[in-house]
Image: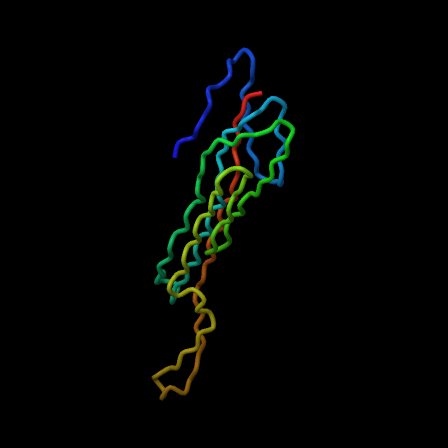
Length: 160
């Protein structure tokens, strides 16, 4: 989806501004601004955990996805306050949060990566067959936590 833009005012009369919102919950529309081009980016999904059975046999892990990117034009009223929310990055294996901007479509967060086949194996008990199955021992997998996804943001472009 391409960004819908109105014809830019002449360079002599107005200045182009680009603002990136990474925190907070509201933005006040500057004097003379009747629309903004908004790019919303959802929070990225967290990477998956990956375990292995003996330290030498990596389990399969699924990758996370980035947050959705939405480009749109939002009509505004100078002096009004517009509420928004920035999608947080997902934790290990978790989906990212959605980014919202009043008057615009929501950008969904990315999907978290799936855990590896042996994730969570720490403490699993096995029986040794060498002495009739009476000798118990504990095996511990080498779990690796996935990384946290990046936070979303909103990029606003306008002329004032």
